[in-house]
Amino acid sequence: MLFSKTIEEMISDSRDKVVIDIREESEFAKSSFPGAKNIPLKEFTNNPDLLDKDYDKSVPIYLICYSGKHSLELCEEYAPKGYEIYSIEGGIYSYYRYIIENELTDETKADSRCKEIERSIIKKFRRELWSQFTKAINVYELIKEGDKIAVCISGGKDSMLMAKLFQELERHGTKNFEVVYMVMNPGYNRINYETILNNARIMQIPITVFDSDIFDIVDAAGGSPCYLCARMRRGALYSKAKELGCNKIALGHHYDDVIETILMGMLYGGQIQTMMPKLHSTNFEGMELIRPLYLIREEDIKKWMNYNELKFINCACRLTESCASCGGTDKGSKRAEIKSLIAELREKSPYIEANIFKSVENVSLNTVICYKTADGKKHHFLDEYN
Image 1 (tube, rainbow, N blue to C red):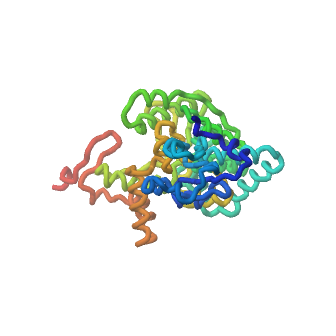
Image 2: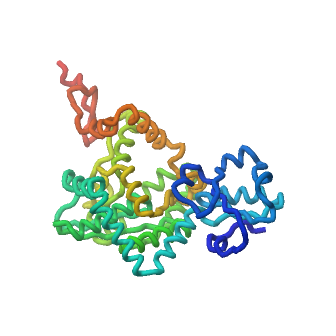
Image 3: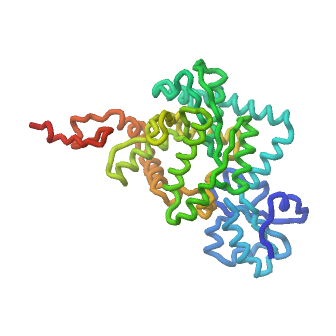
């Protein structure tokens, strides 16, 4: 028996039906299918007979999770008990994709929606987004005359915002530079891939797509995939950008990524270092990496996203979809621990984040036991103490 249905099949089912969103309450509160009830997965785990008390077996039940994985597992558990129960293929993102595709059918509305998104960047969120974007470019000298920049789009909120900011800079900026909006498909599942393409259409970003088999290669390698995947993806982006005549790639790391990296290095790596706003590639001569969102807070990116009712993919990694179905691969990671720690510290002092950020700008070498220069040479304070 097949327990999966597409979002279109569920919507076309004209019978009385129950839609249950099994994601966490905080995620359900942000958005879900209209009329859906929220019963988090952990409640099913704690009470296997949960449906028996309140739900009629003659009424079809549709379950929605993040990716469709956990909802399918529940279907396999409850169907033998006599329930007509289905898992929505692709989870909540298939619903988001459905909404986007329907928005795009009316070209006039689609064009108006794109203009509203652009206007919100320049008007409503000017101080939080546009001003911080241009400030980072100027302070860290991220763009030079004659640059050709590959803006790398993963499909998440950060990179999609970065692409729109670059579009506005192209229109209103004074520098003479070119931009290529580049999307690499390392093996995304169909729902995630279509969501990226549809969001690019909604936001009218002229993307250049290229395929790779990175997910297959990393999967075959075994072990923890994240480190190897990140290195391979970075290399593939550099390679394609160079092929397209670019001398820079732009990534969507933001302010929160920077301060989390600083603390992670101290607490888990025993070192003081930061995520640099720009750096030269060691493997691709003449190529440079820049981070134009360096001064933009993640909280402000989320506010912009929610204001415009945009739905971006949360985690596009095909290899960790079991994690994505629980709300993203960050859960349980060292970065998630650091993010939680910073949130706790912020409640005690509103200056904590700024102080973490500024700590690597105010290093006094006279009060450091030892430091390394770019060539790897160590300098100890005892070397010149006497």
